[in-house]
Image (cartoon, rainbow, N blue to C red):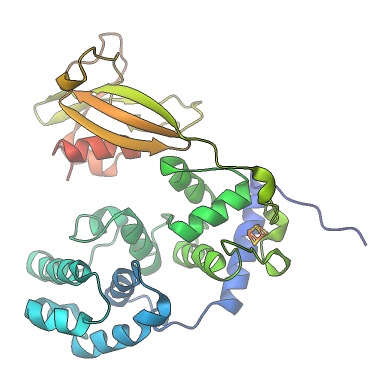
Length: 330
Ligand code: SF4
């Protein structure tokens, strides 16, 4: 008998097979967890906050007790902080409980108890970062956004046989995502990492996506992780009358084609002249990013973008980070 042919994830057929196989496996093998019983945003949000840095087994009892005490967001928002912390007691990382409480008050006070419907909106709330926002929006709201956590990072690296980091990881996860069932797909990837594609010993013989995996468990052959390269990059931040000047990446760029970013400028002799300095990683490169309040080169092709349009514009992760740090985007 001949072994089934390996399908690469570089092809649309390979990616579709991965989605179908993974979702079919998830439908029959997923762990029966209380927060998976429905897609209620309050319950999904609570579970995601509790699961941060905490094992599933430790969360189970606390999750039920919390919901008994605060069955709705209105009850949580109206509670005293001391009561919230008391029910959280034993889970640790109490900042999570304080942020959850602050976010509940904000939703009730400013949005009449209506939950956000996109990852971008969830991310505006206290205590919600990129992973958590994408997890809640995909599971509770059906938004096609991918998540990346430690499990997904490991699974993706093996499936694609690539050392991915930073924005490259999020991009790779987004390309594989099953847009028709984003929440289930994201949970399936994390479940695969937690129960099959284990860190030390992947269980490839029972893996539902074995046929589309580039390494098929032969992870040793990849050798040591390549050293991260270091690079410095300089951008101009040019804002006028509520607009910012941005350029579009070429459609044939290898990374993030068609996305918008700040215009790049040549390096400055004196790094202290930068208005803003931050760090950012993309695939195997760690960047020190220096931003100057300056005009782009006259020959730079670009457009003035109104501030209110930024939320819906396809900005690179780095551009959004800079605009947020500059207070130009919320
Ligand atoms: S075949 Fe093995 S290495 Fe590849 S995803 Fe499955 S468990 Fe992980």
